[in-house]
Length: 236
Image (cartoon, rainbow, N blue to C red; front, side, top):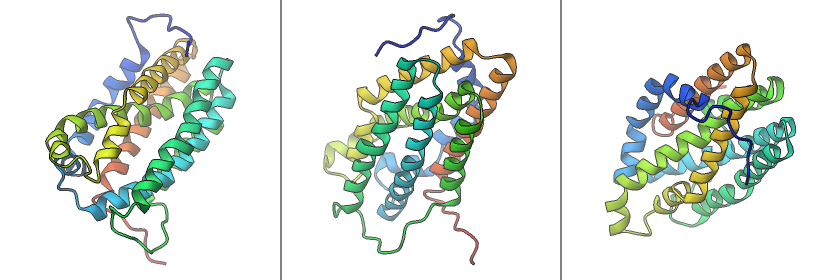
């Protein structure tokens, strides 16, 4: 897909966003959940909880991307966000359903509800895309693309020995999906679109884009961390 070019390819606005969130991203890289996912020692119950929550998240994320598509500045940009919404709602969600019902992960007969981190993240993205200018919404949805890609690239490397010994390992298909070149290409396109949005945004909008990207990255950290260190809702 051809996307609008950034005015200053040597001075990318997304690099600013990435640099501003280095401490948060380092904290994500250091999470016990990801370390144990990579070396294969993560309890299956924890992985199931993560997949359950991620399935709920994807349903909300798909809606946020669809809203963003409707606010896009041109048809090509809108088509990218709409296609990404459809992918999250269909292909990625189908993978999660297969993982949850394929008999590899332990069964769970209890109703699945959003965790505090999941509900907070989805609600933030939906509200931001719906109520803020397009550039701010685009910056808010980018961490899910970009951080997933970086995390899964690292996981593919750290999990290589585990997957070589057991190609049918419960985590193999999930890691492979998000380390896929097609997904990596979609991240590159999302970055270009956010660069383009930053180039045309006002100064207050660019400040708001930085804030939105940072807050979404905080939610990424919470989402990954609470998959292992669960935070139940207060008892009713």
